[in-house]
Image (cartoon, rainbow, N blue to C red; front, side):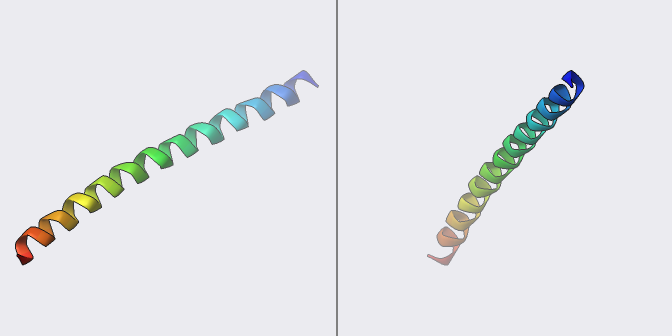
Length: 45
């Protein structure tokens, strides 16, 4: 029964790490999009 607990805990840890990775990539992409938007706005002026 203890193996089931550790397997379940490991799956949760992996899920949390995966979500953190997705969040980090999304934040970086949002920053890049904002930079590109400001560059386009400057060229249009």
